[in-house]
Length: 106
Figure (cartoon, one colour):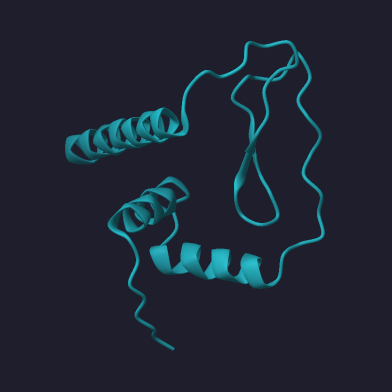
């Protein structure tokens, strides 16, 4: 069944980037998110990382959003929400550019 949904451009871009990162189609990714939203799993998030874990360990919560835990004793983040979003968007843009360069080198 087909459906048309009007979504913000930034969200569409984020969905396409995530689909590419996970090597899935946009259709598969959106269907998985909608399914997870309607039927969340009962699995609890994994425990906080220990001092031996990487500072960038990311896990996905049952509701589909990332849970980012810091190493105990590490410095607190001083970035605002807007700065964090800009940082993530820049990182994703760089990743897209790297993938583009790799694709045209083949």
